Structure formats: C-alpha cells, structure tokens
Image 1 (cartoon, rainbow, N blue to C red):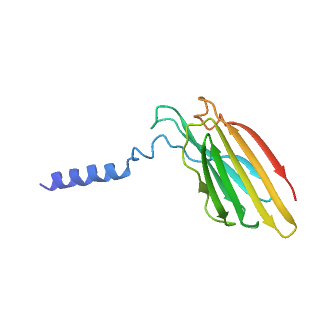
Image 2: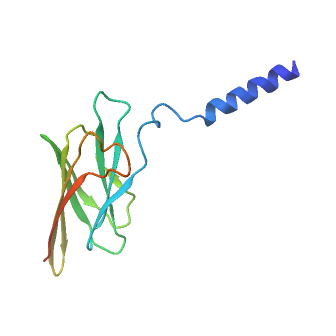
Image 3: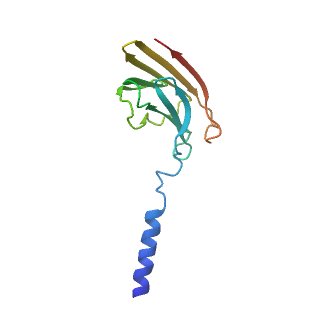
Length: 142
C-alpha cells in the first residue's frame, strides 16, 4: 500500500513538471533590434501549433524614456497600444501567420516627437533563433 502511494506521488510530480502542450513550440523571445531612446524589439515564433508558422513581435520600453504609443500591422490586422509606460513588462502582440509585420512607434517629449518604424519580413525558415527575420529600421528624430 505504501509503495502504491509513493508511486502515485512520483507520477503526479512528474506530470506537474512536464511542460504543457501550450508551452512546447512557442519559443522564448529573442532580441530583434534596439531603438535609440525608445526600447528593445523582440520576436518569437510558434512553428508547432498551427498549419503554418506564426510569429509575434514585442516591445520593452526603456525605463529612462517617455511613454510611447505602439501599433503593429500584420496583413489587414492592426493592433494598437496607446500608452506603453517606461519600464513596463514587455508588451506582446498576438501570434500571426503574416510574413510581413510592421511596428510603428510614436514618443512625444518636450523637445519634440520621436518616430520609428520596424519592418520584419519572416520566411518559413524563421523557426530557429539563429534565423532572425529580415529587418528594416527607420528612426525619425525630433
């Protein structure tokens, strides 16, 4: 009886420690680029749960900068965050299968408005951290 209870406890512990199916396939975030005085742009991929690969972009605004508005365009889908606060945890946009994803940033400060655009062009092979997407970055200083 004691051995059966011990066996059940070991099996239950193993099940808790195994990664969930939701965690498998969605990879940790990788740095895509950093934008001067704005923040760091990240990317991640999910090449397991869908028929075709999907990618997600995220932004972490530097703690010593100003509130920034961010929008992401992936195909016809547009997502907006009107106020990303400095130092706030990384803001992620949803996973999308579109291979062209564009982030636009606007940061208003006393000296002027800072704007930036990041265009990530994914390909089917972008399912490994060592295959980042093709990237275009434009920064429009004050």
